[in-house]
Image (cartoon, rainbow, N blue to C red; front, side):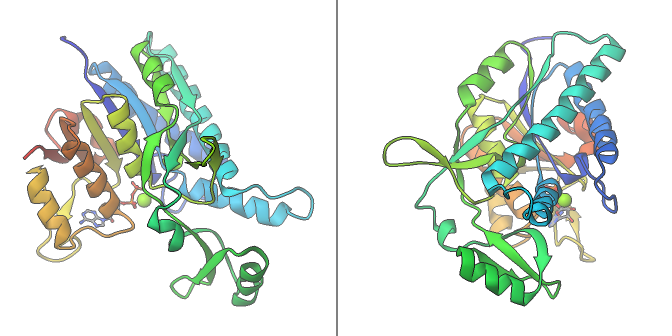
Length: 317
Ligand code: ADP
Ligand code: MG
């Protein structure tokens, strides 16, 4: 084979936890193991793989642990919770990949997790409009008490109770991109920017500081893909394609599509903001910023999608 292609693969929630599961360590380890079989398939096909992943349910669980344990141990802020989940999820991936590689006699691709900070702009308008719900549900009374005590923002969430909301700023850059690139150059399978990375701002004195926010993992993955010079940005989720008229009788799957055409469809409102919207936006940014192509596909069809036999492929034009 010629020069191997470098790809950044963004894994969705289903790569770590399936619908209806409780979230035990065993369940997550089992799912991660199955995901790593897919990753091994990509390595076998000759790709240099950088992985990123979501952390919604995991950080939610850590926030519940924080709440319930707060009488005995100090609760940790969001940035620290993000770091915690990157660490444990990264561990699961590193162990699974090592075990699969050992069983199959694959060498030369040591897995490693880089706990990653992602820089955001302190003037990002998202900081003035916290909108991303995180953590457990509370009663209105408790939510109001917390708002007064801490200045946190809380909202009523679709009749299910009150929930804290945090800003979701746009990622500007991956702080550890140099070291990640170096590791990939040496053949490592790097797991980075988990959960969209730990959001940090650069203060006026030039130093970094964590903030209470959540970055979308697909948008952060796009930054990662640019900064490690990936040829392709691959978003793996739980549906086989991006669709127009999604869930309606005239639903249509998109195969290969130009960035220009997909932008037009996005403007028509085909892609929901909390789910497919940011994936489409991230894929578009990657291609518009000079990436060769982006894919949005089902986790189980990763290799087929790379071969052009499955998924939605976003190309220049
Ligand atoms: P992940 O955990 O992989 O990031 P999300 O749940 O955030 O996944 O987004 C994937 C979901 O997006 C799919 O399960 C699907 O229900 C939903 N979705 C919304 N709009 C569309 C669309 N236009 N085409 C395909 N899927 C869509
Ligand atoms: Mg999901």
